[in-house]
Structures are given as structure tokens and as C-alpha cells.
Amino acid sequence: MAPTRRSLLTGSLGVAGIALAGCSSSRESSAPSSGASASATKQAEVPFTFGNAAAAPTLDPSITSSLETSRISAQVLETLVAADPDTGKPTPGLATKWTSSKDGLTYTFTLRRNVTFHDGTKLTADVVRKNFDRWAKNTDTEQVNQTAYQTIFRSTAADGKAQQTIYRSCTALDDHTVELKISTPYPSIVKALTQPAFGIGSPQAFADHEKFGSHPVGTGPFRMESWDGHTAKLSRFPDYWGTSAHITQLTFLTVPSSQKRYYELLAQSVDAYDQVGIDDFVNLARRGYQIQQRDPYSVAFVTMNQKAGPLADVNVRRAAAHALGRSQIASTQYPNGTNVANDFVPELFKMGGEDTSSAYRQDQGLSKRLLAESGYKGEELQFYYPTNVSLAYIQQPEAVFAKIAGDLTSVGFTIKPMPIRWDDDYLSKINSANSDRAFALTGYMGAYRDPDDFISPLFRQDNPQFGFTDQQLFDHVHRAAGLPDGDERSDLYKKVNEDIAEIMPAIPIAYPVSAVALSPKVISYPLAATGVENLSLVELRKDS
Image (cartoon, rainbow, N blue to C red; front, side, top):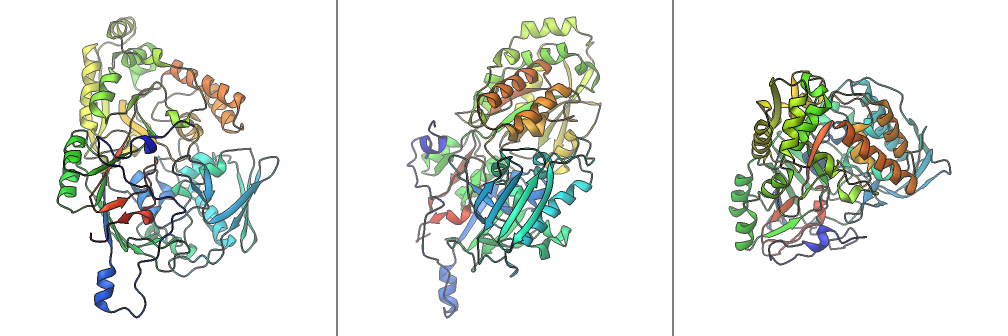
């Protein structure tokens, strides 16, 4: 396996590398004993504040794909299966082991014993069953944005209507053994269950659905104290089944501006922050701050809605693709190490695939000819883009939009900018059917290391972002998901990538790297390509 960015770029721009804590690292708990004095207790407090680049819409990861929701909730809710931060391979979580039947339709998980939820509930197989029942019931409610459960178990159509699902049942065989049954082989299902969306919650807590969205209760190393929509406060769980966290008080602070996040770190208001601005790398390095870069785990792209008049013509879509200077965007609007995307699957997720770069290469002369030969007559085309946010796949949305809109205008497109605040439910607006929306700037963040994680959410069925139907493509995506790793699956994904490039529902822009800036007090930070780090493994200097 090729070295990861984690192993090659720990400590960017000449900054000294820092040790990365592994899941098996051990340390003594810093929790004070029951007889400790008030002064000793205060002395033992170890606070840590992380600066999020966007507000979490909810703290229930089962109903959103938000990275910020996943990052916070993963400290509280644990999954049956964890993922190795370097390889993405499944490792024990709340389940110590698992087996699958020969036909690939039954999975049996053995649970850890003596695990307690933050509200005192005991982890049992029946608790796990109730979580699966809850996720399945979520599909009864129509919603624009697909959940991880709906994608993995193929339970909901693009319009939010319930449809035939591959989920069959989750059964408690005994107190510590769970049996999951599906109707169609899905060899990647164990990897898929590593997503924070499948964090196991206390049934007593999620009985109140609304409250659970602001106060999840799990088995994790931290328990939720409070959340006001912008700031989440957590504390170390004293009865955690695993190694106690070094941090006693964990705070997530929402700071949408990259410049403000930079100054918050300098002012020691945050101890770490995500999505380092491209202009801040050198300044941070010169000041002696640590910067850690993640491997590309996301793709940025521009959707082209074929329900929006002129974009129904493939030549108009091709004209748009050939108009864009994607190399310039990747090199000027993203951190060093970001590559141009020639399809919708980052390298870490690929099984192989044809190079489709020719489908999207910049050639403005060709773009103008295609546009002249099409039926486009200069109609104004709405272009949606998010504001007041930094995302893993678009750190500076306004600047990226300006470059793309400029390229489109230069070949003859008439663009109507449609800026929308991220916290004004931007994703719902671009995921809903709307024949007035022509283009939209967006992307997708991976959650588990398999090509289906990118291909299925985007191209397994009708998607309002793109406004097209191609049943043959959809069938290929479903079939590839059900195949075991090997040449047949790899060849089918090559075919899928070629078909997508031919249909051209969107223009891939970049596979961005993202970075975390750390204060000098941090001596160990457990970097993960997903952006969802286990912050119980953070180590701070004793004198901090």
C-alpha cells in the first residue's frame, strides 16, 4: 500500500512532526480520585477546544451527512465496528468480533461486555436491535437529504419515498450476540457500519427524538453536557469501558471564517482548528504551530441540472466542462497536495479506473464551438453556491465560484449568481427538484473506504442535483456494490466512471487535502482522513 499523507506530511512546511496516538495506546486516567480536594480536582482539569469550520445542523449523525455533526457525535456515540485511521479497515468497536455467512446475507456480531451508556443503560444486543429499528423507521419520513442508512440499505428513493430495502432484520440472539440480515449481498457492509451515522445510542435517550438531536447519549469517552447550535460542551465519561481520555473538558466552537479561526488559535481561544486557510500555512509554520494534512477524502464538483432548460443538451454540459480551468482552481484555491479530479472517486477509494481527464480538460475554443452548435441562446442560468462556511471540499466557496463563473462567462454562458448561506439549509436547496437551478457548487466527503461510498450516494438512482435518469447506469452501480473486491468489480467501476463521463451530470473539480492547525500545547493528535478524529487520544503538555 502506498504511504499516506498522514505518514508523509506530518508536520507541514518544515514544522516538526508530532507523534500520532494509535487506538491501542495506553495511559493512566487523569480523573481525580473520589477523595480529591476541590483544589486537586481543579488542578486535574484538562480543557481542549476545537474550532469547527461550520455549524452542525444536529448532533444526531443518523439523519445528516454533516462532517461537523459526525465529529462531535463520534466522541459520544460509538459504532459496532471502528475503522483503522490509516487503512480504513474495520477494527473492533462495541463489537469485539463478527462473522458472515457464506451467502453474504447474515452478519453476526459479538458485543463487548460491561459497557455502560452515559445514562446508566447497559449495552446489550437488544439495545443494538432498537438502534437498527430506529434507523429503519427514519425512512418513513420524507426528507430531501439522504441518510447513510438510506444509502447503504437502499431504502429510500431520491424523492424521499420508501422503497424496497436490502435490510431484513436485526435480532438479539442472546444478550451479547446480534444477527443482522440483508436480502442482497453487500460485501462492504461492515466497512459501511464504521460511519458515525451508525453510532449506537441509548434507547431511553432517543425515545425523545428532538432531544436526542441536541443531547445524544452513547457509550463514548465523552458525554454531552450542552449544545446551543454553535458551541458543544462535553466532559470525560468517568465510567468509560476503554482507556480514559487525557482531556476532561472538550469544547467544539463554530468559527466559519478561516481568518478568524487563525486568530482564535493565536489568541489561545481554540487549541486546534480544521480547514486551515491557504494563506495561513506559512504564517502558522513561521510562528511554530503544528499543521497536519489529511489524505484527500472528498471531491468538489459542480452539478449541472438537466431539468434546467439548456443543460438538457449534453453539448451545453460539455461546453461548461471544457470551459473550466480546473488545474488553476486546484492550485490556487486549495492547499498544496490537492489534485485535479477527473472523476468522482478519490484515489484512496479506487479499485482501478479509466482516466477520464479528456472528458473534462480545459479547451475554451472547443467549449465555444460546442455552445455555438447547441440550442443555447444566452439564457440566464442560476448558479447556487454556499457562503459563510469552510467545507472539507470547498474551503473558500465564494472564491471558487468566482473563478468558475468567470470561466463560464468567458465562453458565452450568462450566469446569475445565487449565494446562499450554508446555515440556511444549503444542501436541501441543491438536493431538491428545481428546474430554475442550473449549476450548484458542492462536493462529497467520504466516510468509509470503498468506491461505493462515493458512487452510490450520487449515482445509484435519480438525483435531483443532476436531474437525469439512466437505468443502465443505476443498475451497474447496484451490481458493483454487491460484488466482492476483485477484477470483476474493478472492471465494472471502470465502466461506471466511463458512463458518468459520457452523461456528464456534473464537473469534478478537485480532490482536496484538508489540514488541522494545532497549538504548541498539543503533543499528540490522532489524525484521521475522514476528519472525524477520536479526540480521547489527544495528548497535551503537562504544563499547558
